[in-house]
Length: 152
Image (cartoon, rainbow, N blue to C red; front, side, top):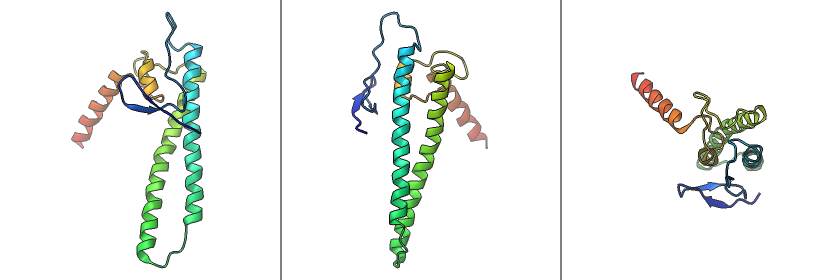
């Protein structure tokens, strides 16, 4: 799948999988069918990319899994495989978030904060399509998590 890099509003690069940024229409209702279709495309493209990468990792590990005689070579290969597996584990967790977001689209809850019920916002969702909290709620959670982690 060909991807192109598009600058978002903040000037950072994001992967949009060949999908242009959302153009809001005048008086368009939040999370309209058009917006939901837009985010469904992004989420499905992201999901497909992650699933393809996982398949490549399995193929790579099967093909490269040699019983190397040299201990240094064997250690390097194991280290490489460990890094790949950690990356795939993070991506597996991300795939769960993507599926949760797709389920929220189907149920009509996508785009609204899990804690406050407020609109998350199109710009935030374009930057992080799996966002489930408004920026303010996310910041409160991170502050709270940091405070509790300092106690432990």
